[in-house]
Length: 176
Image (cartoon, rainbow, N blue to C red; front, side, top):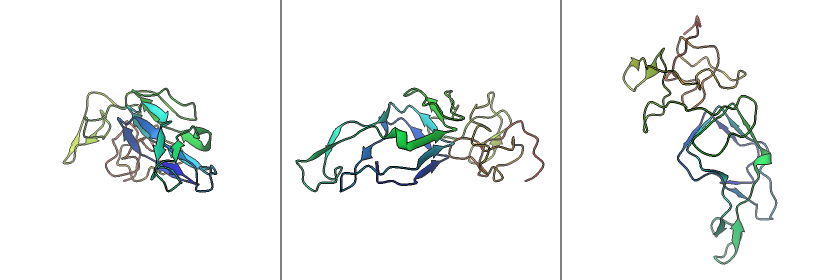
């Protein structure tokens, strides 16, 4: 829910099986100040709608009574979405580095992405029979040094990008 969310960044997030990605709301003055919102290096899986349009009463509205309703609306023009995977939900929003492919999660409860070079399973590294397109697909300007070798000198999309649990790639990095 974004209300007066200036310069909010969602980075390396995973959103799974939700009806709506966002609900945009107005401030107590009725203004719309959701500028500078960023969604980057994320995976959106099974998200049905870009934003909610339902009417909601208090506490969802800025008016403190139960009769006044606020309607959700489209404020996506104030959201920069880049290097994000859109799968099994609403259509991909055009943006730099955005893709629409199955992220190949390890399971429905384990959101590590599969890799033939190695994926952390919570105990050890295992090699999968497929490799996710989300590996080395994040913003090239973002830090990837927290990822284990081998990596492709680029951050992975999803929650484990730039962490020690990031799935490995076919890269030939020489550090860490």
